Amino acid sequence: MTSTAHMTSDGPPGPAVQAPAARAARISKAYGRGDARVVALDEVSLNLERSRFTAIMGPSGSGKSTLMHCMAGLDSVDSGEVFVGDIEVTRLDDKRLTRLRRDRIGFVFQAFNLVPTLTALENITLPLDIAGRKPDQTWLDTVVDTIGLRDRLKHRPSELSGGQQQRVACARALVSRPEIIFADEPTGNLDSRSGAEVLSFLRNSVREMGQTVVMVTHDPVAAAYADLVVFLADGRVVDQIPEPTAEKVLERMKGFELPGVTS
Ligand SMILES: Nc1ncnc2c1ncn2[C@@H]1O[C@H](COP(=O)(O)OP(=O)(O)OP(=O)(O)O)[C@@H](O)[C@H]1O
Ligand SMILES: [Mg+2]
Image 1 (tube, rainbow, N blue to C red):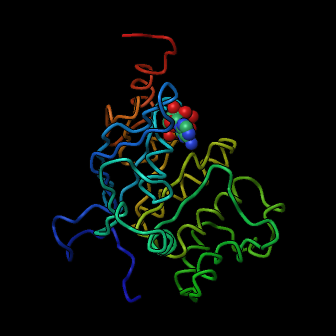
Image 2: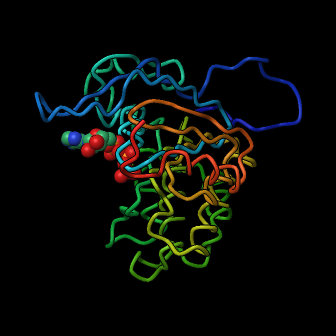
């Protein structure tokens, strides 16, 4: 690949209007049948703009993980379309889906999902090794320096703190320069200091490397790292807050985090 990282430069070049890194167009997804049927996503449309950090929030069960999985090609939709770049994910067969996930998508899970027998560095380069690609050394160095773990590269996950492990997982998602990184509660298992390390890393990857990141979180402080917060409730997009602060997010959450309230 000859493409350079998409930078958030101060001016041109680049077209004025760019296609989003990923988008969902009226996607719906239900689980189960009959009485057990649950509509997880109800005609959700969402654009994830390039080089932007988007947070997805909403009550438990509102469809956040389902949305991430459907947009990342990890799960299928019942109707609607998902695009990553100009590729329609919802039309791909299994083989092409696997390739898309491998080459264009990074996913960071709540439970870091590192391979315990591999070192930090081996974990980071694993997706490239699987794809039979050689890491671009300059880029790898940039990623490693950004996560700030150069002196821990030979450590195994059990020898790293939670925050360090999750930063390795983020680096692994970044190393293949994916079109977009999906992170489902990446700080859910971390104390606030380790969480802040991971959030700063994700934000820096957007600011400094032009990455596109979308992250699910329950934490208003975490959401405030993002450029935009999108709220889901009952499988629908119900609100958005640009330039969020923790206070604004908390205020909005009060509106729907009340169990047992009926309208
Ligand atoms: N595999 C499944 N089978 C049946 N129902 C499912 C399945 N996965 C999710 N659901 C249901 O779909 C709805 C949305 O689930 P989802 O995991 O997307 O919620 P979420 O917003 O990520 O919640 P949380 O904040 O608790 O992680 C929920 O009602 C859930 O019970
Ligand atoms: Mg979830």
